[in-house]
Length: 289
Image 1 (cartoon, one colour):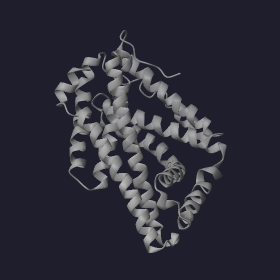
Image 2 (cartoon, rainbow, N blue to C red; image 1 turned 90 degrees about the vertical axis):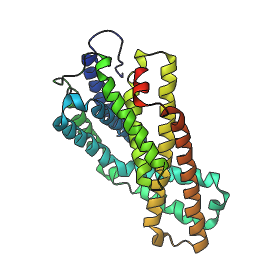
Image 3 (cartoon, helix red, strand yellow; image 1 turned 120 degrees about the vertical axis):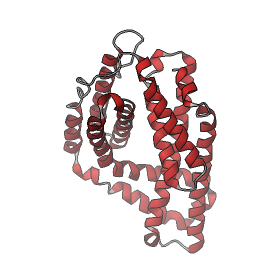
Image 4 (tube, rainbow, N blue to C red; image 1 turned 45 degrees about the vertical axis):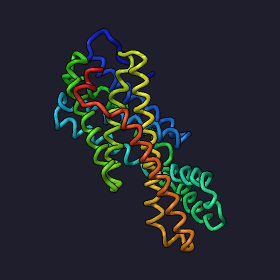
């Protein structure tokens, strides 16, 4: 069961127990992947993102060297699972897009469905078997006490400058993305938003329902950003394999336009969320924590 912070006690010790709890969640999710790869991989990657966000939050306390070392470890775990996740998500993203766009239901687009389905079926993680997930789970379980020797803040007040830094980075990234057509700028906005969301979420037990609703709004924004990323990944994959698909020129144009239209709509929706969530100056935002 996930450990939750509480208003009493040593705040630093509670953070240590929270990090231990997240590592245990990762290990359990990897074991779940033995029988349900899609769910287990998804939960593992989410928890890796969460602990990486907390590492960024705590970087001033744990030091650059420890930060980089542990970031690399969790990035590696998420990375070896990314191909599996992308293969599964691309199929789901394509099917949802077909449901929305009647022009993509024509017979010619069966080639897209077949290619994506085959990619998911040939996922390299499937051939590794249960031992792969078990070994990875044991590796992550061994990290559960990694924060034991860290000198973490004893009060939430001491952590507020760190939250201010994360909020400022998310706010600046959103402004860059809004003014840019470069998908990498939007990806940076998405990543900085996730850092802020996961870091704020740990504080929910310390605040009232209004704060919880605000954190849920950040979650909603990151989910929209994630959907946009799914469409960007799909677009890149199909462009890379354009010749293999062999679509007629008109079908190829319709496919590209449909994905880009949906991607741009999701990006616009994310910026609408950000207009409300990231409107305050960092010092004003932090005062409410």
